[in-house]
Length: 259
Image (cartoon, rainbow, N blue to C red; front, side, top):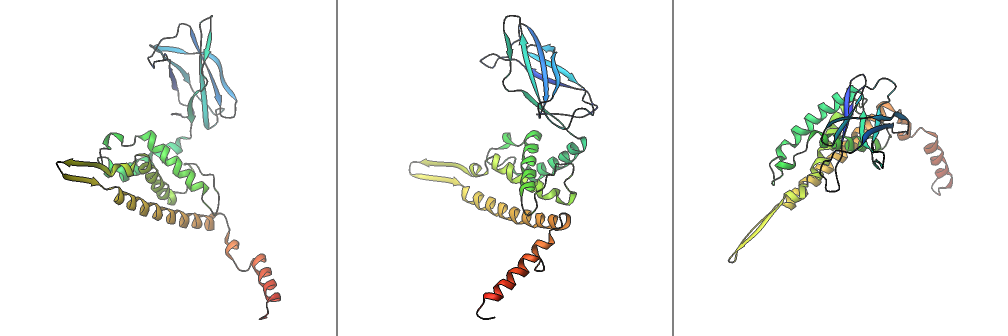
């Protein structure tokens, strides 16, 4: 997914292909409509520019009117006989540059944590790219926001820096899941005239991953509790001086035969 920034000129692209996935040049004019995620139309049926083959682009210079968030670009072909348009748009995002910088820092740290896995089990060609690492970081940020005791709505720009590490650790777990850490341990079974060789380390991978997940879950809980105590002022929930526990204790004393 392409990321754009305010006050910077960028091109958004599409490529037309036939039913076999081969690029083709449309026989008519190509137009584009761009909408914000709430349905607001920002570009209404404007002509696109032809680059080469089936590739077309449109130049955007988003200003302050363009809100941060997701946008969809619909491309249509009008050849005066039939009007063809997309059912699903090309999606891009306009983002605060600060968010991108912080994500870039986190991506480098997650890449360093995963580098040792790049050549394990024949997975060198599946080592995550930046786009995939950003997806894992987003999953981890969602994990952070949804974890009790305090629900938050942080994006990358406003996550307090002391908590970067827990989001990076969650992204590592998501990356290991996606690259098939369990399958990486299943190497091969070989038999030659009764001499058998089995190389299967899935059990060790499973135990390591389970320990990593348990460690992360505890750290996430501890950090979320600390964040809630420092920022949400929920100390009263854990205090015996609040009204509910005091009233409950009085009620229990009143009915106890040992009172």
